[in-house]
Amino acid sequence: MADLLHIIGGGMAGSEAAWQAAQAGIDVVIHEMRPGTGTFAHQTDRLAEMVCSNSFRSDDDEQNAVGLLHWEMRAAGGLIMAMADSHRLPAGGALAVDREAFALAVTERLLAHPRIALERSEITSLPAAGHWIIATGPLTSDALGQAIRAETGTQALAFFDAIAPIVHADSVDLSKAWFQSRYDKGETEAERTAYLNCPMDRAQYEAFIDALLAADKTEFHEGETAGYFDGCLPIEVMAERGRETPRHGPMKPVGLTNPHAPDVKPHAVVQLRRDNALGTLYNIVGFQTKMKYGAQVDVFRMIPGLEGARFARLGGIHRNTFLNSPTLLDCELRLKPKPHIRFAGQITGVEGYVESAAMGLLAGRLAAAELTGRALPPVPPTTATGALVAHITGGAEAKTFQPMNVNFGLFPPVDGLKAGRRGRRDRYKAYTDRAKADWHAWLGHG
Ligand SMILES: Cc1cc2nc3c(=O)[nH]c(=O)nc-3n(C[C@H](O)[C@H](O)[C@H](O)COP(=O)(O)OP(=O)(O)OC[C@H]3O[C@@H](n4cnc5c(N)ncnc54)[C@H](O)[C@@H]3O)c2cc1C
Image (cartoon, rainbow, N blue to C red):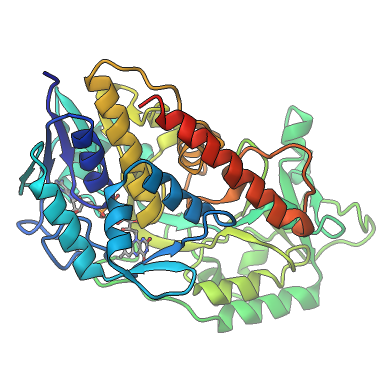
């Protein structure tokens, strides 16, 4: 008889983890703090409550990475996808759901499972022994957040994200941008060319500042305090403080020579820093922002070299509790210094309902395998689930780690395919075909 698995948090990740483990024959207790202790975003006592939009985003499993994640979770018998499919609303290519009926159905299915028990209580300290999954999400209660921070150190658990937009490297126009680190700093050639630089002349800079100031911005939610002002000012707030401020901050033009026009000194330079080991993604340095998504695309495509940029994710600043997973978690989502504790969901540094549920699915399967003495091979990084977990537990830059959505930039390239915009459909189809075959093979081990 296997031991009990405890799961803290009955959100997207905790619900899916519980389902997967219980289906594998493990007895599970879910500890959910609502309704006794609430959050500013949850409205009900239901499990798997969708706190904001009612969309699971694209359902296209051939051309879209999030659609592929849907496919993988369906293939793994996922509860979140099954209930989303049962309560689907018409929404074109997106998977939108009736949020009330969805959360009710997830709750009922979990409570009806003979191996699952629900305890309505807040957990306020790190468990000392047993088998645990912590899936307490972006709004982890203060007491547990402090307990995690005491274990991991203050640098390793963030309470806000300040996300700069991330661009697919192959969408940057290299006839305008160039690779160079400021003052050519670095021991190796890779370090000396770690940044992509986009130059602006005075007119371009002034037009860019005007656009930043005029752009639509989002407000903080009630209960979300604007605690970002010290270390990571939004780029538009910087521009509000003074038109020249960004030029003395992240857009300063010093220490850089444009090889496309070596004699012209740029008025300002936007720098993009490599964001993953594969070198397929770059983040725009210092460009965390509260601009609305549509406005971000318009404004950031004004940057010379980024006119055709495709964004792997747009910027944002939110209340969000998340770990520095590249340093803290092993590839099975276990806390390195306390491997009896796994993490799952948004707290691991993924972003979104679907990604959070996927990390719950994985944690539930890995915990069940461990409890029954089976060893699962690592999830192939060629699958959407595997690409995400490989990114958060190793592929991402630990120093600048920010939460990530699933996207094809996280996948190892498929050899022999045309790069750039024209080859995209074939490339994405090749990624998803490969992922499906590899995911099936991995599920065969479970
Ligand atoms: C304001 C806001 C808006 C968002 N909008 C969207 C959106 O539109 N689309 C999208 O895809 N994603 C959105 N997200 C992200 C979304 O919250 C997550 O993607 C997803 O819900 C995370 O799943 P999770 O299981 O990790 O956390 P959650 O779904 O939040 O579940 C965590 C659970 O843990 C419980 N809990 C917390 N602390 C404790 C404790 N100490 N003891 C016991 N239980 C505890 C909570 O009550 C909660 O039920 C939003 C997040 C926020 C904060």
